[in-house]
Length: 94
Image (tube, rainbow, N blue to C red; front, side):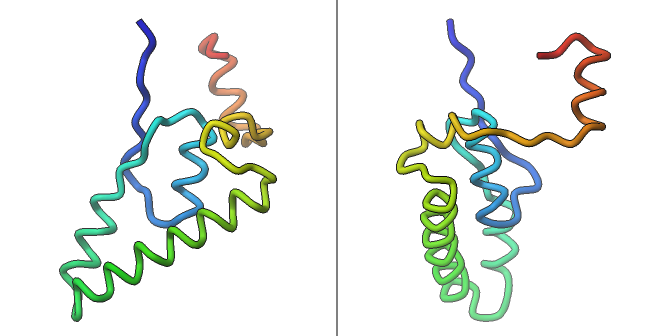
C-alpha cells in the first residue's frame, strides 16, 4: 500500500501550504489559523477574506514555480536547509 501524507501543524499562510504540497502532502490542514481567525473580531467575514486571499496567493505561487497543478508542484525542485539535510543523512533518510 502507498502511504498518504497529510500536512498539518504550524500552517500559517499560503506559502506553508505550497511547501507542504511540494514536499508530497496530499492535502494540508489549516485548522489552527482558521480557528484563530474565526475567533477574532468580524471572525466569519475576516476568515472568508483570508481563505480567498490564500487561494489567490496559491495560484500566484504555482505560477511563479511554473506549475499548473498540485501533481506538478510535487515535481518542483526543492532547496533544503543544510541542517535538515545533515539530520536526515545521519539517520539514513533519503
